[in-house]
Image (cartoon, rainbow, N blue to C red; front, top):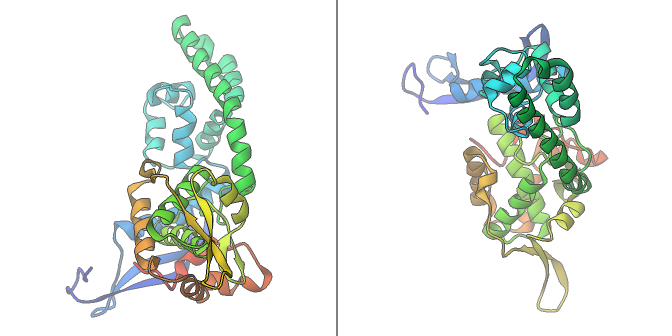
Length: 335
């Protein structure tokens, strides 16, 4: 990229700033470019989105407003069109569709949307506040969809227990990269790197860390929602043993030996094809960039590289969980 003012060289600047949104102030790492010739500051659409995402993420958590993926998922579990869902919630015909397109809900609407998360609560709301205003046929159809969603929730309960066991009882926030921990995507990331890099477990832990933190560096969101901890040999998923145990259906551990027969580690292998459909295009780009950067590195080399990261340096002595905010100071990956 060149300067829009002179066509010359530019510098990416990251600096702490406080931005205000709807009466609240939020600390972010502000990104902008400087023209090296004139010293003028400017941004592009990508940097504007990254700066705003940092504000919006904190605001949503602070005020209990659901994130975009949650807003979409809440409605889809009932298989009700967005226009009709908007009317059911009392928003007007098109408002809910705007929220699914990325517009930030106001406080009251955001909290109203939260009742849709639990089908039992939504059933009570629909029965008491809405159903009497609808024609009988339409009312019965929606009630059947709500009952179906309640039954599906019961079926999903076992999957949720598996997710909590593998990734921990973590809520969306700065320690998950503002993403709800996703076990299926985490397992597919293991498959991706096992296919691309055939890494030892220690190296795989670093590949996962760099994928999630580099993606946060670029977008303000992680990919998997995994929380990472700083330990002696670098950043690792907080519950990586449980993660690998849950992923035994897609990734296997194979002991690797020196010629003298000494075990040097467990290598991760897979016969499973990577499921790219779970990922957005930008997430796939991140995974490929991390694989290209580190596939040829040995385990020791990637461990040593991870030891230059601020995310590890400031947390290792106390074995802390790492804030994704430190992703903006990654040394080993750049734009």
